[in-house]
Image 1 (tube, rainbow, N blue to C red):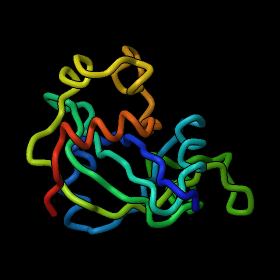
Image 2: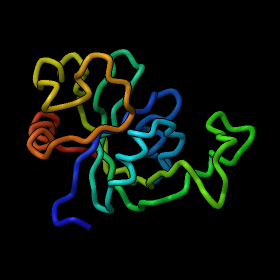
Image 3: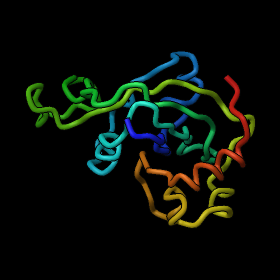
Length: 158
């Protein structure tokens, strides 16, 4: 584990898997990622890293909570399940293509930071989610941007 945790932004649609689902479960496998760049970001995560939980495809979309990486290098089981929408027939148990991490719920923010607000406060270089056309579900967050986000969002409540 690196000396300082890295920061991430991870998107999910709230009606599919939202912050309240994570709160109820306590931990979850962040599975179903089928983009190589996003997968590679997950592969670079370490235990103790923190991730902002971002509700995408919501009105409005934005950061709603905070999670912590508690396990890395997990094989995504959904790639082997034929009836799962994330099934990958080219992936084999002895050579899986897709990984995931296990995340733990830390808390929810009293107020969300909407995408519109984020665009007003951050440049594309400071926070990748504000870049128009960006569809990646997992993005690194630079340490200085993470610090600013924490100040803006305030404390999380369990």
